[in-house]
Amino acid sequence: MIKQESYDYRRFALRILLVVTIFSATFFAIKNWISGWYSFAIMEGGIAFFWLYILSIVSTTKYLERWSFIYLCTFYPLVLYGIYFSNYRSGLFAWLFIFPIISYLLLGRKVGTILTAISVFIGLGFLGRLVFQMNSDLHWIVMGNFGLCVMAIWSMVYVYEAKSEAVIARLKEQVTRDPLTGLLNVRNLNETLASVLYSAERRGESVTIAYIDLNDFKKINDTQGHQKGNEILLSVANTIKSITRAEDHSFRYGGDEFCIVFPNCTLEQAKNSYGQRLLENVHNELDQLTMSIGYAQTGPEAYLSPDDFIHLADKSMYAEKCAFKTQSP
Image (tube, rainbow, N blue to C red; front, side):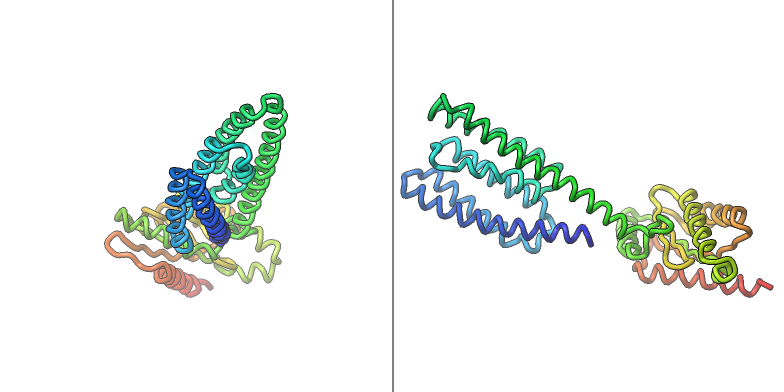
């Protein structure tokens, strides 16, 4: 959700920039043609038509960052070409001020820094040549002020982007993680499972789900209090973390229920290795606490949908739960 919103604002920003620069390039292409700058006018007109194509697909493309990069790799050279071959009075150098802003806005901090560094330093070099040719006495004063101004804008944009990334990372962590246990929360289960199943189907691998329910947990909350219940949930979650692999995905499904997705793992492997260790560790560490665990496997021949897969594991867990209640005194 957060990633999608980030893409949406970058998509909107690219659309606005395309409209502005298409208009500008078209206007200056006509002006330069009238002034006799035919090669530059043709270049501007051709790039404007190419930007029109990008504008036509920007609302639907899945490759937004790639097209943003292509756009900037045509926009920046066009401006730099103009700075190099025009005179100081053209004012084209003013575009350098927004290079850092556009780069970070469309491409983020990592790629934006690289593209900004290359384009800004080339642009400052071209500008220095123009200023020196115009008046060598003013060369260092003009370049010093201009360079410092560009660097100040660049620094502020960098800091803003870094802080934004940190805030987004914290928000993403809050959205994807259960605050009590630190496990993934149920809102990400279907999305994660769909991704795991897609990868498994491409590789011809099995996927197994373990659906876990703590037996008599309500009785614990009623007799020992919710604080004790939370301590038990946290301890179970830590045990789950300790027995699972790095590629596994562990979720708190809700209340006293947990779910583990085991990629590239059969039902027998999950049950005999991870499940058995989980049962033993929890039973030994938490005052004889017991769990009902249901297992379900899909693949490698045929694959269930995420919803059907979860339902199958839930049904298996419910059967285990009924068997436990039947055996209990």
